[in-house]
Amino acid sequence: MFRHVSISLRLATWFATFFIAGWVLFGVAMWFDLEQTLTAGRYQTLSRRADRLCDLLRKTESQSSEEGARKFQDFATATGDGLTEVFSSDGSRVYQSPSAEAAAFPWPEVGTTEQFVRTEYSGQQYRTLARPFVLGSRRLYICLAAPLAGNQTLLQRFSRGLFAAMPVLLLASAAGGYFVSRNALRPVDQITTSARSISGSNLSGRLPVANTGDELQRLAETCNDMLARLESAVKQIRRFTADASHELRGPITFTRTVAEVALRNPQIDSKSKQAFGDIVEECSKAGKLLENMLTLARADADRSSSVFEPIDMVEVVGDVCSKIRPIVEARKSTLEVCLSYERPIEVLGDYDSLSRLLWILLDNSVKYTPAPGTITVALIADDRQVTVAVKDTGMGISKADLPKIFERFYRADRSRGEVEGNGLGLSIAKWVADIHNASLSVTSEENVGTEFKVEFHVYSNRMAPGKSV
Image (tube, rainbow, N blue to C red; front, side, top):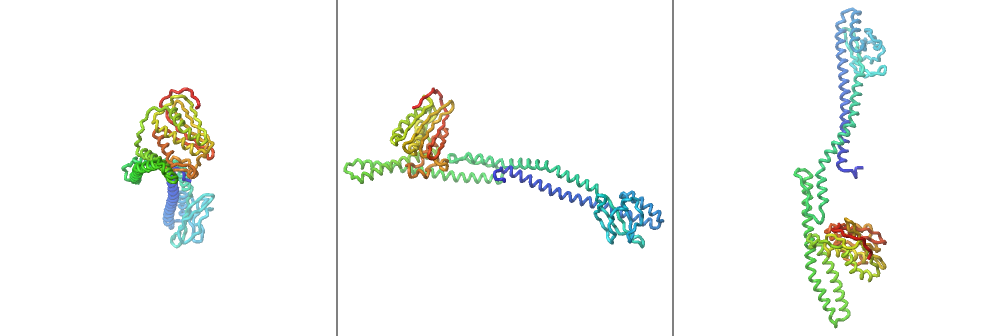
C-alpha cells in the first residue's frame, strides 16, 4: 500500500493514525471515568439523603404517627421529587409517599444489605438506593431514587464533543506530522541531491555533512568515507590502465616493425610469410585498442588537449563521408549524405575530435549493416541547434542491449562472433559528445536498423537553403 509513497507522507499517516487511536482510547477512558464519577456522585447524594431521613425518623419516633407522616412527606417532597419510601420488614409502606410515581416505582426487594442499583421506569433510567435501618425494635428499609437524565445528557455531550473534535484533530495531526517529517528529512533530500550529482567522472564530490550529531550526520560521513575509498580505487585502476596502455605501445610497435621487415625478405617461405602477416594484423588491432584505452584514460583524467574553435560541420561531415565511402562501397552498401543547409554551419569544438566522433558512428553502422544496405548521414540545423544523424538498415540493437551500448568493452552477444571490435568506440563517441556539451542518443529496432543522433548548440548561423549530396 505504502510502497510508492514518500517517507514523509508515510510518517504523517502513521502519526495521524496513532494520534487518533490514542485520542479514541483517551476519550473512551475519560468517558468511563466520567460515568464512574457521576455514578459515585449520585450514590453520595442518595446516601446523604438516606442519612438525613434516618435522622428524621429517629426524631419522629416519639412523636405521633400523623406528625411523623407529615414530616416524611415534607422531606420526600423537598428531596428526590417524592421518590422516597420507607418499608417495614414485611414489605408494607410505613408512610404514604406524596408522589404517585413512588407508589408505582419498581423498588428493589428489601434485603439485609445496602443496595445501589440501576432501575428503569417509564422509559427513563434511575439510580436506586435501598438501605436497611433499625428504629427501636422495628426493622425498616429506606428506599430512595434519582433520575439519571442529567448524567446521560452530560455523557452524550461529552461523546459528541469527542467525535466532533476527531476530524479537526485528524487534519491537524496529519499536517503536523507531515511538517515535522519534512523538516526532519530535509537533510536526506540534500544528501540525495548531492549523491546524484556524483558520478564516475567527478568522484571527488562529497555529501554535505551537518554538525547535528544524529544518524544523518553519521550516514553522510559514512557515505563520504565510502566515496573516498571508491575514488582512490578508481584512480588506481585508471592510472594502471593508462600506464599499461602506454608501456605496451612500445613492444607492440616493435613487434609490428620486426614483422613488417621480415615480410620484405624475398627469401621468406609462405608459412612464415603468413605468420608474419598475422602478427602485423594483430599488432594493428592491439595498437588501435591501446590508442582507444589511452583516449579514455585521458578522458577519465580530464586531460583533454583539444582546443575549441568554430568548426564548420558541413566540412566535417563531407570530409569523413568522403573517407569512409570507399569502405561502404567495398561492402556493397550505399552511403547517402543529406545536407539541409549550405556552408557554414558552425559549432564550437575540436575538428579532430568531431571527425573521430562521426567516424566512429559511421564505422559502427558499416560493421553492423549487412550488404546490400543503406547508410544515411543527415545534417540538419536551425537557429539554435545542429543535429548530425547517422542511420543504417543493419541488424539493429535489442532493447536489453540498448541502454548499455555506451559502456566500455560492452558488445551485444549477437555481434560478438560476427563483427570485429573491442567495445570502446561508442564510449569514446559519448565522451567526445560530452566534452562538446552535445547530446548523443540512439534509437534502434532489431532487423530494421539503428539511428544515432548528435545534437550540438549553434555557434554561428550564416545558413542558406541547402542541397543534398
